[in-house]
Length: 580
Image (cartoon, rainbow, N blue to C red; front, top):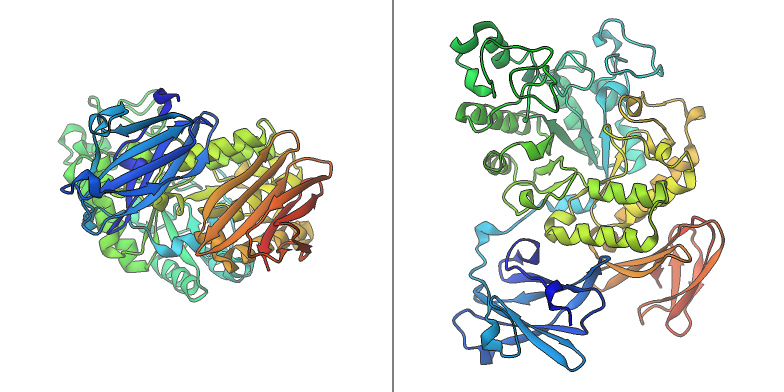
């Protein structure tokens, strides 16, 4: 038994409460190394001979490790526990003091008390969320009267600086399109006053950019979206502001005498903007985006009031947080309190492209934009640079980083305003995009569609990925859009796909087959993906209660024989099996 690989910690994603009396526990072992893991637990003040045994289940595997998990119930909420790990004739106790054949010498892990105030709760509605990201300037021009000067003809090539006239009225007018697609969450990139087309250099956090509309336009958009069952998420750019933001403009004018000089990270005076700013900025020397000092109480209070204002005044349903990992944790803790006080059901999503564990302990964000997910799907489906086993392992590793509350709220994107379009990454092989969409809609977390992906839009990295939406149906891929509609409808109609756990059933590199299941409240659904060109057959073990299986995508009915169904998968085909 490879003891060096075994790991547990009584906190973070290895031990977290899922309700007031239940602790979910995970332990990591070397892959395919142990045969059985049992957890013995009891009240912290109870003698060990009264402990309750719980056999843990293997819930995930990456390339190096297996992960076992189980839920232990505690009537007193005071928990002490020890693992008993077995392999053949070998058996060890594992506790806070390490490994031993003597339980007392191994010690106990402690979860002192499940306090209600420490529970990580996320909005229940998010589990059924279908997110649609819109770059407002490029979606639809609903009011030409508010267009910027020298607006380009719709459909021309995007550049870092040109404008096309997309606005909030355009989004409102196209809500029926989004409703028909099945979308129920809109995420809008920034809409506040700013001189750029992307609006990530904010001039006024309280004012809608006049080329997008005004406060009443926002209220109308949110009101009509809510009437159609669609929630609205705004983009919060609190890491930095724009050069025309009132506080920075005052510093430019008054230098050290400005009362706002401590709102920013200024190295010396007078202010220098080019060629190298003498103040900290977003990215490298982006002088138009000075970094805000959120440790300053005045800055913090200003931004927290902004966060509450748009929830209370316009009724938005949450925030996506730009460059979230470069803002201090204390600010985000206060931000969460302010947002949840304004609306306990508001959703908070951070933009983090790497391991986001420190921000997902329940005191800051609800979840993040799942770029770990996107990178795995791009490498597997779009580029084909990794096999099924590696793909499954990367997803498993990502899931095990986080508490399940966060996993179910992930924005599972495959492209965005900051990346090349997925179809472009796939060398415009539509079958690869279809498989990625299939997986998005059947995996745990919130599927996020970047505007136009559903109709086959292409585009290289920024600014090319920010093209205007193609509204001419003769130029849209209508079959692809119908495929998205079908997948979304299936997801929303079946609770295992929105609320269920995830289990890998088969990851076969040789045949390019990937099978997995989602289970919830006694119902299991099985998905099979074939990521190869030639036909493959596979026998799939199904629950004993199944008499036959129905593929929800094709409508085909498949008989069950000896507890199995035999699937014949065409190239690049996916099936969603539900028992009958």
